[in-house]
Image 1 (cartoon, helix red, strand yellow):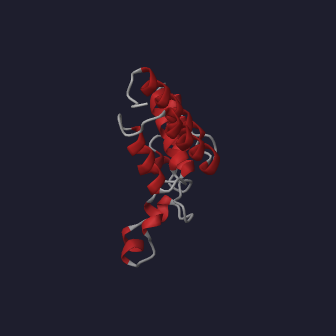
Image 2: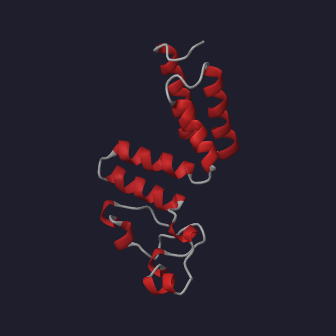
Length: 138
């Protein structure tokens, strides 16, 4: 997919043939007839890494750096199992973990197992902030 520009917003209207779900079905193929005919699976309705990264490019072109980073973090999480996401979320709630090491291990898992470097860096930063603010028991 070519780099997205501000003029590509919204992608669903400007580039529906270039946006596809995990099974490769493009957005323009998702129609009521296709749904009624049983040709569409739930997987076809999930956003893809490429679509999120294109949204990040559009956000960045619009000067929305924080939004762009959120889309990039979302793109990293596409291949992370739901259980790992929920485990990480639970660990990031203040008072849920008792050491920086627990968060460091989770960050390492995200980084090494799933290639989620931005998310892993976020968890590492959270561990340091929790330590500084005394939010860890030990």
